[in-house]
Amino acid sequence: MAGLVLLLVGLVTAGGLYTALAPAQAQDSDTLAIEVEKGRELFLVGCSSCHGLNGEGVSTLDGNNLGPSLVGVGAAAVDFQVGTGRMPMAQPGAQAPRKPVTYSEEETAQLAAYVASLGPGPAIPDESDYSIEGLDDDAKEAAVVRGGQIFLTNCTACHNFEGSGGAMPRGGYAPSLDGVESKYIYEALLTGPQNMPSFSNGNLAPEEKRDVIAYLKSLEEQPGYGGFGMGGLGPVTDGVFAWLVGIGGLVAFAIWIAAHTTRSKKKKVTS
Image 1: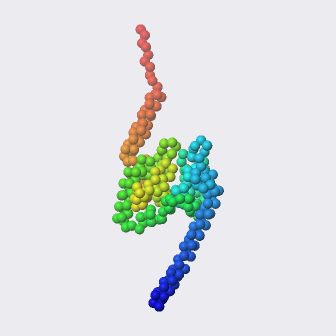
Image 2: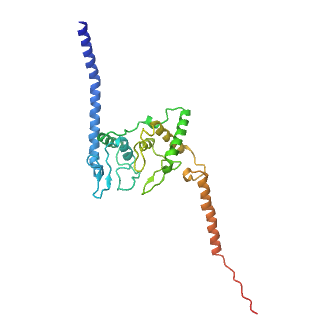
Image 3: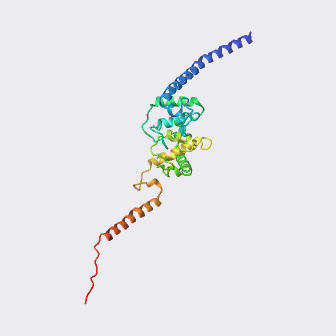
């Protein structure tokens, strides 16, 4: 009888747990399936002409890549490209510039859900991944210092010392990072859009990405004491500017004066 009672209790407990948990799991699965289907409908209308009906990419007859494959890029790449207005592109080019967004936040999430269903890839980060608000003042300062070291080592070649951006070969450019939302900076580091290399969690830990963002945000809070920042390169650029513009302007002005001054001619004395 004791064994029968234990078996009955076990069956009742298992049934109760299934009743409590299984419907919620099924509901989450149904919600995700609906999001994926809505995202697919948006994708077929606005994205398939360049990226293919199934996100496999499109190549032209001459071998050029009209739109890359989206299999495995993950939801984070979609959230970055669509959330910043870079996609859909107005026309093919070397780089997609940031512009007003086409899709709402809900539609962007649906597109991200559909692309994520094509293959495993980076997920959209949570605010805790890129924010240091929960840290104390000493930890925040340490994060900014570490982020500055990482940024100066890995990012200044393209984005400049203070994230002002700069030109790159073949029509590309590194955009300015001033005022860019923290989530999009984290997603750019994670996915490597356009000419930017991707810094996966294997070569740049999530905490290090967060520290880089903390450093960039600290730059936005610093006032420009010298007026024009000139890229934040320091006294070297200030001196070059002074020589080229200041001294150069004085030399040009002196040449102009010499060219417009009436020259006296000596008269020949005849006997």
